Image (cartoon, rainbow, N blue to C red; front, side):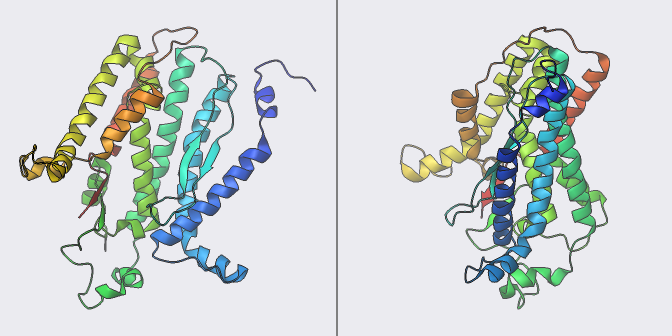
Amino acid sequence: MNFPPNSRLAILREQNIPLHLGLFAATLLTTTAAGVFWAGGTLAFNGTLALINSLQSGISYALSLILFLSVHEFGHFFAALHHRIRTTLPYFIPLPPLPMLLGIGTMGAVIRIRERIKDTDALFDIGTAGPLSGFAICLGLLIYGFLNLPPADFIFTIHPEYIAAGGPPATPPEGTLQLGKNLLWLLLENTLPTRNLPPMTEMYHYPLLFTGWLGCFVTALNLLPVGQLDGGHITYAMFGTKGHRRAGHITLTLITLLALPSLLELAASLTTLVPVGALPATFLKLSWPGWILWVFILMKFIGTSHPPTMNDHPINTGRSIIGWMSILVFLLTFTPVPFSIT
């Protein structure tokens, strides 16, 4: 049966279903393996049954992370389908956990839009549908995770060396990974009746908390108002070319400033040209050198400009309200120092 060009049925019929399912299955496997690592376990390769049993501790992590990625990308897909724009189903990107990297088992998921966006409404709807629907999953994971924490002695199953001290040390050992808190985390931490909430140096052993946190981190990165990121689409639709360009310049400047103290500290350790201790410790605590990598990626690979749609026009009041909600989500999920090493 032939369908009209760009009909929803025609868009669905042109999908490469086996490829998408294969990538999904591979990503489910690699995220499960990564979940075993974050749960403090190890994979057993001395037999098929042993391997399957060793993967069980990573299932909660994998399913919750895959749920977030799926809802985020299918939000984009269904918004594009609603506007009859030729778009692929999500491509999940598996990443086997490597010993030298703190891998999460995936590089995320993406859709590919196969044609120029028709108008500003379609651009806005596609841009907002992903991060807002994904944020709803993050919020649900975090609230459930905060309210259903395991007993305090759960950490001893991962760190039996903590038993003698009665729990995690007040001062973590040097070289411990520590995750940062965003505004949403602080809000939930101070309003929900939680018990046994782990420190941020141990939180990644709790799969729902960790995947909720990862989802927030990914959401904030996507909502950066730069180029053709989701936040760039939203900013372009709300404020036009000039507003998009201004927001991009401000964002790149701010995240560069967030990286600068850490880079100066690194330079001080490598050369005498930069004095050691030149910056106050507070500046260093609020700095993450990884932001400079994002600046490089945005400027050299993703790009900071935004192409026009086939019909640029102002969006209506309802969409403007949703746009400001997206900006609020960005502020809630943005983490100035997402990762640090004690």
